[in-house]
Image (tube, rainbow, N blue to C red):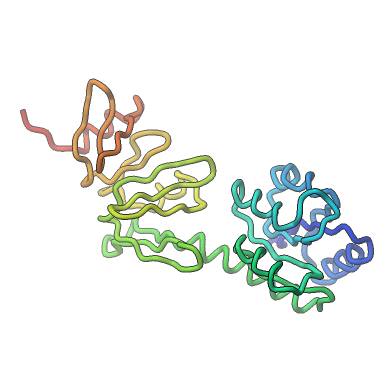
Length: 244
């Protein structure tokens, strides 16, 4: 099994040295300990870490909490806060970023190790929460993360799935859910007999189509007009039954 790859932020030289020693003793791969928070996102882009260890007070115009909020908009990486702040206000602000753990200094190596292991394990489980249904026709639902809960969503209730940057929105009859998955990853896990990609940004439920405008190369689902990409048009036409 490959080592867990970790990127950390820490502006205190003493705590940085301790962190490096702990990481070495736990046999994790420490990519780096970053002092300047403005360097973190470019380094994430270049290194793709498994876990972030985030200090909150970074002696900068941006806090660790602010930084994690920005990171969450771009990447799906679990965060463990490591901080000297013990007050409820800071904790509640950090909690809004949905971290994997919140550790206060000084900490024990065992405490940090368990937080990292739980962060990786939870993220792996979460990524599997969109249940693979390709080879199991009896599975007609999936579980989608909704806040801190996993919500059961019937496949028949899904109208379409829309890609947006590094996220996707699953649109049902009554609600939409945001998931941190690529459209291709979702497509690979949905039953072919029910779902079809019709555009680089859209997967549709074939049963949910209200009408198709061939001349305009679009279709409608629940009042939403969805374009039909040229490379997907023939595949769509081969999947629907027509009269006249």
